[in-house]
Length: 218
Image (cartoon, rainbow, N blue to C red):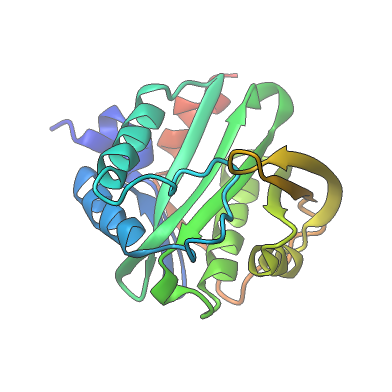
């Protein structure tokens, strides 16, 4: 019998490292994640995201959130894809960890991005989930380089990158919110610099994802 993960392989991907599990986000999970986002990811006077997607009224955020995830599924192709995985910590869905790329079969590189509900921040989950996605990318999905970025007024994100082994990779001056200048610190990680977590990564479903991005048909 055909399952939804047969039709869209990212939904069948699972990567587990100790108490942290990354896995494909189903529609029911989107409902839970939208509720987490509405409950709060950051203080209203701060904006940690390159695109300020949380700057919408609370009653509009859930629909905007699920539409974004549906759009990323619909546009999945070997030439351009965004892998968004739910983050479960000790069995509870607490956030999203993703990686996005274009022309991956040429570049073998992509950029990580993530968020956690405020109630789960400051517990080491951010570091563990970044280590998990980087291990997944390097060991199972054919990456040779992973980039990231954080605004310089977001020390928590920069600290996670430092712990995982990212090196500084230049800065950009960006308009964050309308009329607001912000400096974004670029970061880059290689397999040799990668600082792995204390738990080994167990992965299922990666072969189907590899085929969907053209790796095993090269």
